Image (tube, rainbow, N blue to C red; front, side, top):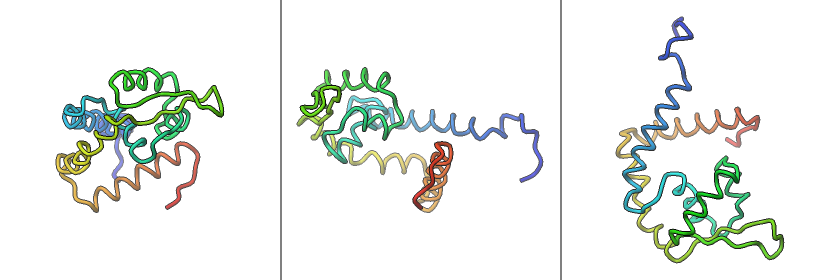
Length: 149
């Protein structure tokens, strides 16, 4: 890499990640319109489609969100009829989030989203695999963890 002024905007990796995140979120906004959900809500649904009935704490840990951010979003999702929130019988402090029938039915409508996003991004599988590994490693390093790959 050639010597560059480290204060040039073009030199800032964080700016590129920030801008990329906004652009990808725009793509998701269009793709999620038919499901009537936001991108953060989609992330919650991905977790619940993977494993139904998770605690708020588990969801927060997986999405790197605190309960102050997560709880209002989950309440809106409950009002929309796609999840239900119930106190755990084992631990009253714990809230279990599970899919309603409507939430389960949305999975089928959402199955095309990943491939449409890849199509919109116009990157081949090899590029996406490398990018995914790089971002995963970066995230683990920033969190002080070691990667499993």
